[in-house]
Image (tube, rainbow, N blue to C red; front, side, top):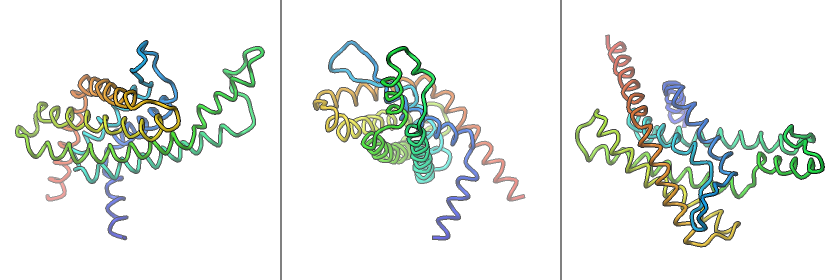
Length: 239
């Protein structure tokens, strides 16, 4: 137990603060923005604004996996999720505190709008539960798949190597995240059909993969920077 705690402290102390901060920000952001659906104009195509942040969570995990390994990346993912749950609790407390939101000052609709804003920020237990289960499962899948693919393919250290393992693991894990959430929450509580759950999972994974493709050069540069800093630090310790 003491060894586990010590390793956790070393990991959180050595992990790049920027990457960890971006991961936490993305998880909090995607869960909050998931409250707003996107009007695609197609009945069977269901998306929400959480996709604007979800790609960032997986990109940071890809960088952390390449630099620290899948176990460390998974530990940081669970830690970030725990912080998000704490943030959700704070938002819930804020939603039940008596008061009025600034955006609710619309003549004749103050009470309705204020209640809607409280509901949006306060969240519901099944959405938080579903998103937490989906994220834990998909993050572990992403991290270990990313690592496994990296061991199989060659040209380590190149952008092609980073991109191949990131693209495959991201699409697979994002699909898993979307389908788990859709089956646990959307189907049970919102009456989605299996077709809607599947199409949402696929289209969401495609959109999130597109974001990953666009920003993967940034992720690659971050991974190279972290690896270089770790290498220099290791050399200094041996001197």
